[in-house]
Length: 327
Image 1 (tube, rainbow, N blue to C red):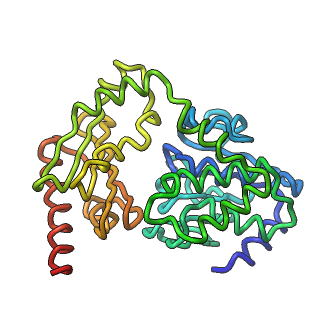
Image 2 (cartoon, rainbow, N blue to C red; image 1 turned 45 degrees about the vertical axis):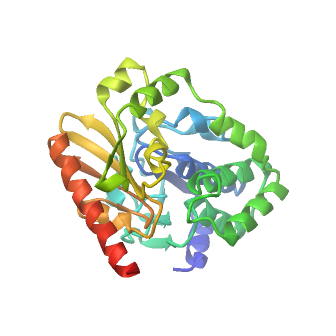
């Protein structure tokens, strides 16, 4: 769907509630805060509500201090006529609302597995980030892209491209980044806020996690685990594990990395990252998950060693298929 209908809908309505997926990352928070700032500039009533708290790394973003939790407001609030869901491939990933709570749902996303759950949907899997799509939307609205808006969008673009080195980085990514700098985003300040502001607890947790690294399938699959006990010992939060999947991913010879985070007894969230042309979204779908070609995830129940065996088997099969295609 083109942006025209979404632009028209925004102009015609006054009250908006913005949300994103559970455990929001830099792209989710950046997209939310940028769009909220733009809508407020238009004189709209806007509330951002996320199920989970904002990670410390992104609390520097303009407007992030106003993000609320479901407990903070009467949610769902019928006064928010329009719900805009950002960076969320499936509505279930919001975690606390249903589409029936609102007269209209707008879905803006870049996940390949998005199932078009809104009445209005704008999703492009080829986009580097949802923040890129929000940039396109804001350019169609009667607003000025201020330095705070540019900062939020740049943060989403930066984090979802892995500081511009993931496979989703392209010419458009750098073109948008250049425009954002002209609007007042400061790359060095943003990078320092995200990457040079790590808590001591996260560093200690990282040390424990590194000790769990394993490799499988002749060293082509890397794995790292964080348990609830590790989080408690280090007084760390779930968001402190963001990007931990990149540690096994960075190992020479590893093509696919799997990050395991224990949510409860025999219940795990896995994050999958691929360095080669393995569609990890397809792998994740085998376990009820989804995501992007090179980055995906799922939730699994069962005994850890058995789950590891199943995931390794699926990833190994995908690697074998890739090898056959190259043969």
